[in-house]
Length: 97
Image 1 (cartoon, rainbow, N blue to C red):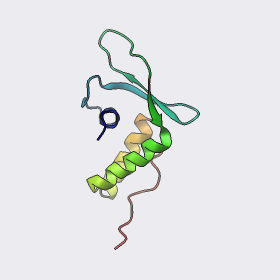
Image 2: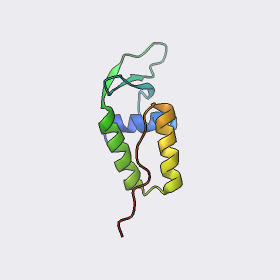
Image 3: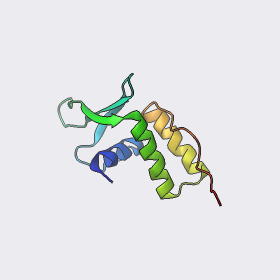
Image 4: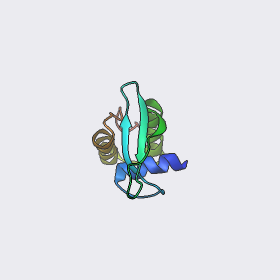
């Protein structure tokens, strides 16, 4: 997993997995992500983190790879909504079998 995605996951779960960790992650009105790293003693600069649609797709792929159950999908969706302000969309992917 790329370090940028690790930082985003850390931000979602309020854990520090990277140095620096993200202090803030915001979606701009035109659908882009900007982050602000935690930098001791100063206000961090803004970092372009990609597109909202890519983040949504990557988080869904991560959830699929982790084998999340329905309750875990709901928890992930709520974290994304509260911490980043976007809807993850859908629910748990349905088992095609």
